[in-house]
Length: 198
Image (tube, rainbow, N blue to C red):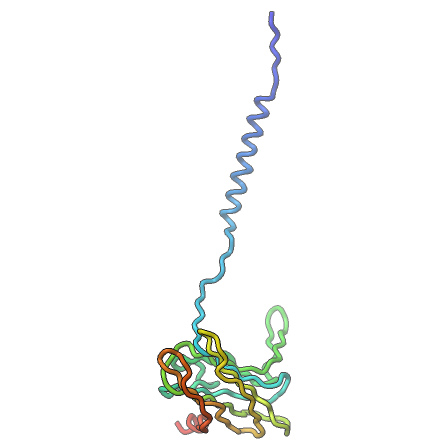
């Protein structure tokens, strides 16, 4: 008579394989539930950036005015005419604090940026205007014009605004249909008075 040995090894192997299968399915389902986040598909289009900045923590309010070749004027009361866009109307130190649910955020930079989102061939006029002045000393205002595609600095210049209501034509530059800057001059042109008339 032959003796048979009974073992549970095949049954345990079967249970272990089923357990491995469940773990594998759990991992796959977890990966499918939480896909890898992809970057946003936002296409930013800009041909030129015109940046105006003055010393931080000053209460003085400097405004930028840009006129395009067809007469559209971007300024703090008209932020998106034509292909131009004023990103932020900086009021000096007066709007440096932003209150959110997370607390107060301090943004001490005095800066205004105008974006030209497309090319309109012709002459652009860039003026700065001292809207509000506190101290007696002049405010040094730096203007930088950057061409984005391909990147180059068209102009970087600093002017001094001394009095409230003072307006300075920083530059007038012409752009051809290919986006190339062809002419730069400083012939004065009042833009602030034009919007007050009409």
